[in-house]
Image (cartoon, rainbow, N blue to C red; front, side, top):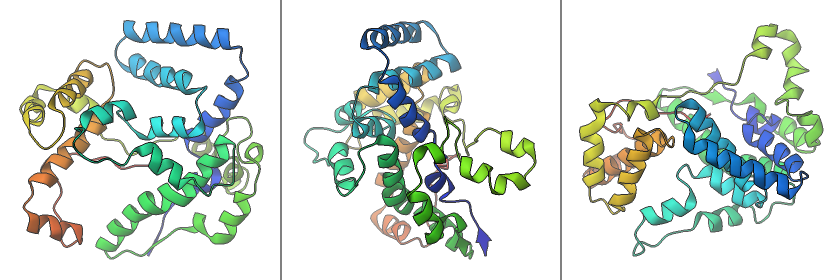
Length: 287
């Protein structure tokens, strides 16, 4: 049996999305003329730089562009690595689609909150945690004969923190403050000061290397039901350093591999019986 930290970010407001929602609330009070000027300057500066600064400015541009949008629009834009409009272009018109906006609205249909911070909390607890995070942990732990237990999701803790005001959960922009001021008092200061880290594989940089040219060209030429020109633009934008599409390219490889897998093997994989991973090194774990 093992104990995991799953649920900590959802229960104690540890994700950067919660910081974004609080910042958005504050930024909306800034005069519109000033906001437009900042946004225009950021867009211009983004086109002039490359490397890590370009990626950071891309995130800043998205924040500024979405500051006046509804919570649902902001959340959808952040969930779709490629952006909803580009995804629509990627999928041919002849293929029936469930619009992500419709899915998101349905998921929040019973949400009792209007504030974006609390709507984010509701979505994490009701949708992303049980349908994504916990599902993956359960499958991988049980595949290795491990019983995973999640103390942060004790119903008494969830019910208590669900009622806590956002300024108590996150004074200013300090994430997981309740945990820092309770259990954190027994931890070394270096642990409390450490930045939040994720389990990342440098897919963006890998897919810039010449070693992947053959695989990437095959991906661009493949006919597996998606718009090849859009795929080509995605690959080139990642290679040129204009956008970080490494994770999305990885997902395209996984989709291509799954579609090319014989039906019987695919059915075996779906039941979890010794499913083999896509034939390519590297993966990424969500945090």
